[in-house]
Image 1 (tube, rainbow, N blue to C red):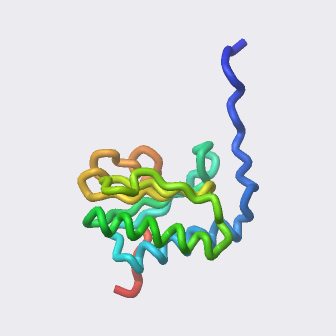
Image 2: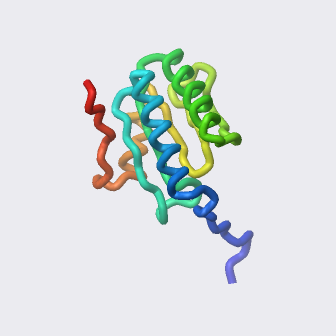
Length: 134
């Protein structure tokens, strides 16, 4: 017998696959519009209990990262995603935007290298999102 609370099983059916795809597209498009660098989308389905997708991007300055977070919240609200939370938005090297089934990590380059989330969560298999236009 194991002591402690029972592990919580994630109900990934909270959002339809179509909404999840639209959320990810809106997130990536918003980040591209804000000139984020090295945008990577990772599929966490079946590998993590806290989210089905993770998007990681790099910004050059605190203001850029804060603006990216603000724009993400606005774009997600347009899709009807209301309960978006952020951590670290005021002058941090790392801002987390939690949209429920998708979490977005916005880093300065040094912090991104230090935390190396792609190595922790991403199989070498996930491809970076490539901006076809430029």
